Image: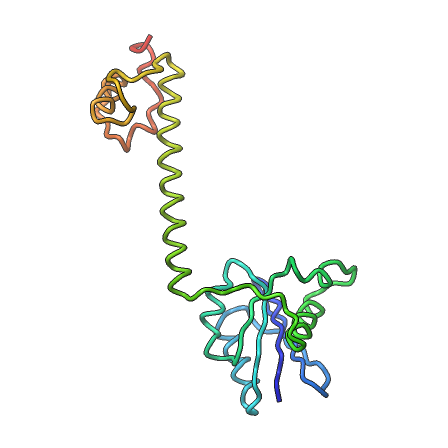
Length: 196
């Protein structure tokens, strides 16, 4: 017999609702660590039942999905913004949310989020991490340029970009400090008198 399980996961606990045709709904509260979830799913499969699980998308959804994929017959990750009948109700708690997700799963109406493969998600994280680093570098360069402009130096000494080697040397000389390009961001123009 198929078991449809809704997980309402928060940082301390996971509320589980097990929905089966012709049986009363069952509830359990377990810890939110992966091993507790695996143990729970193993116990639900002991009677030979087919187990399907649903939980809401979150920052840890990929990790949870990868960790539980071998312990359930099917796992779906739900899009909570498309489950308006859960969120537009006055009566709301973890048990109710878990049950509503399990019921939606049992009737095939869960608004599912596509879960890319682990490799694709890792590739996307790498690209996002690189973008964040590049954005920080650009921010630091803009701050340095703004600091120079704020002290009346609106153009570098040598024609071209601010970050040419010759202009990096010029910036160091203006500050009167032996600093590398990585150190320029924290210079607070202690040498203001030399500039004016």
